[in-house]
Image (cartoon, rainbow, N blue to C red; front, side, top):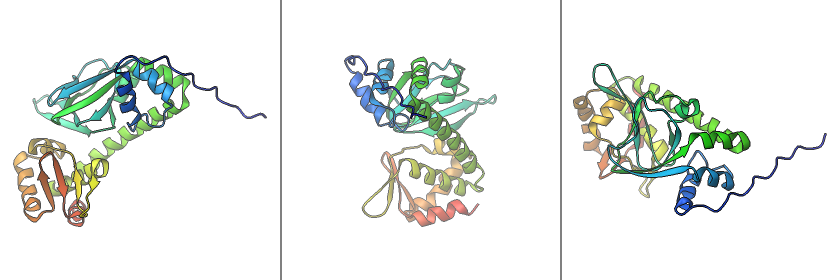
Length: 249
């Protein structure tokens, strides 16, 4: 049988002013980096770029999901309110990652809210209807959407692994190692710098512990240089010790 050849992807019309920046940012995301440029340009034509400050919501719990959100820079947490009034952080997302895909895919309501926790964040909202239309025409985009959903499932599994790690110290160690694997950069002296700034209260929510307990658990690491907060980042100065703490249960 003759080989089936996919039709070429048509070029998009000229981009509107400012859309070229959106295209550039979308191309660097984990979600769309393997998607052909003309498809990204069509997505960008129906996208909105937002510059958000700390505490600003991407959406509220109960909002109808009408867009896919790509984080160009900054940190975002997905958190849910409990009947008791307390809040639980479900997951954390950072630069080049996307968030809220499942609700957008189902056109359902968000079961939790997404809020910026870094000093600032740049977030691109891609129209869900346009993305789904394009995914039906572009196999690379359909595959990218599947892979994004797999990454979200992996993030939820990681949260379960962190919470089941045992002691608060082990949970914290697992959390920091997880963040380092996603966002960390190895420095010339062998230490690992992670451009993530999280309050003690946020850390406590991520590992399901009291803030006071987290402060006590971090104090020996800070004293011995195992893990040090340095401005808007943390630095892992002793990776073997932190890895051993993660495994201690």
